[in-house]
Image (tube, rainbow, N blue to C red; front, side, top):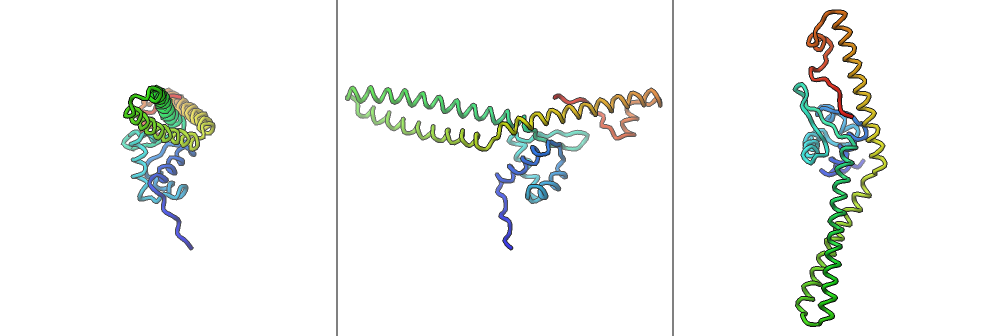
Length: 207
């Protein structure tokens, strides 16, 4: 029986990000160290390093709440970043195309004049360099378009909003219950929070 091929560092990041986007949930490190090996084949020992790399490059967000560190990555946030990157690459490609056209115009003028062979050689080399850079950027654009399913991400963005709205409904229910308990049993917020394990910083989230 052949062993499964180990995942590369980039594959681990893709797989771990998939876990976030497929579940639309918030995790602690211990949760990811348990789920990532089961769901995505990432060895537990590399989950922490992979997660930190995703945090460092902005693909996963983190926040410390009540002494515990929580991680999340909603598709809508990554969609916006990917769209920004795609727009930047397309803008660079357009500018390079303009420079190529300007250089070709200069080349035509120089060739017609037949006066400066050196200038013709310089412009020809510049066009070659620009064309190579343009091809590289066009490959990046194709890669973005191939790897990113924008329709799927938009669907998940809608799902994320529904989850946040549901979280706010539960928060509202908790606040209403606490209000009832304070009137019924003459208790303070701090007492109720401690009794029911409600975080002091509990609040509504932005949708």
